[in-house]
Amino acid sequence: MSVTQEIGHGLNHKDRERVDIFLNRFLHHVDRTKLVICGGLATRFHLVQHGIDSPKDSLTI
Image 1 (tube, helix red, strand yellow):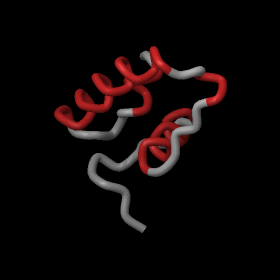
Image 2 (image 1 turned 120 degrees about the vertical axis):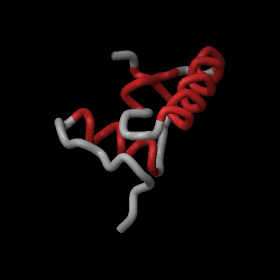
Image 3 (image 1 turned 90 degrees about the vertical axis):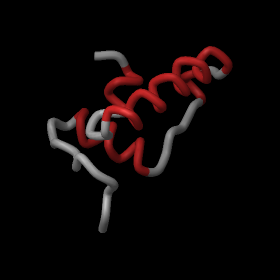
Image 4 (image 1 turned 120 degrees about the horizontal axis):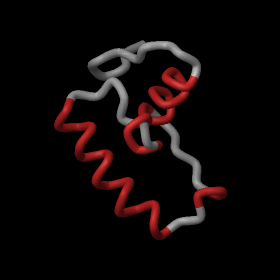
């Protein structure tokens, strides 16, 4: 699974596709070692990295 697919894990298909398209275009223009992703995408990514299923819908607290 690519990084862009991991970040979009838990999103519905349409949103995951939008995130994947955006990141594939965007990441060519930044230094990945200096990039910080925050908010819901970062939360979902870290949940997946630690083996915790993220919610299928928007995160609510």
